[in-house]
Image 1 (cartoon, rainbow, N blue to C red):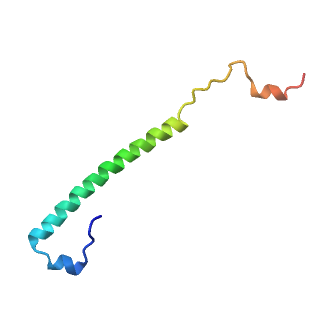
Image 2 (image 1 turned 90 degrees about the horizontal axis):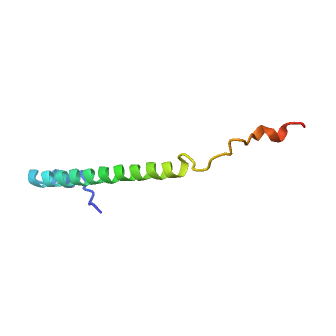
Image 3 (image 1 turned 120 degrees about the vertical axis):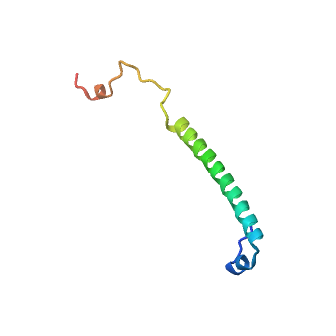
Length: 71
């Protein structure tokens, strides 16, 4: 877990410390973006697998309205 700095703490940091904190935050943000993109791909793949084209095929001779026809 990353430390959350107060404005007072940030104001007391040297320039070098601020640069280090910002670089660390950039690395964390890049990793979070990579993780999020991976999760989005996994969700899309799972949704495609779950809701994609069905492998079940209807019988070509089946007519759902035929159950209502009067003979």
